[in-house]
Image 1 (cartoon, one colour):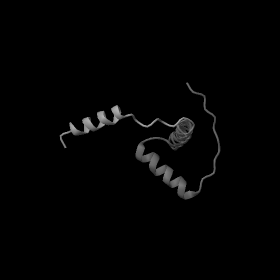
Image 2 (cartoon, rainbow, N blue to C red):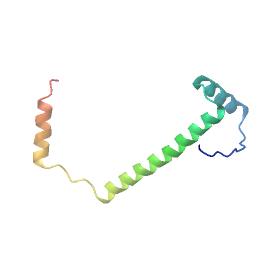
Image 3 (cartoon, rainbow, N blue to C red):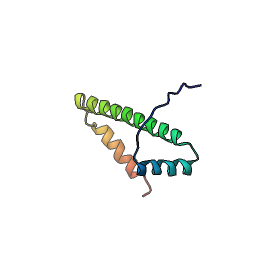
Length: 83
């Protein structure tokens, strides 16, 4: 079982009401809803860091332009489409 630590946070009444409404709609406790939100925030940060790393890599080592054989193959595959 995962160890948990109880924390005290202060929320304004409107936000608390919104959290309670959402938790009720999802059938989870307020604490579970806040845990999910915190995990989503951390995952979002991790994804953003990965996106930055990929973009930095392409800036350091830009992709080479496609050669004529790649362009011809792409054009042929488009020509084969029924649209």
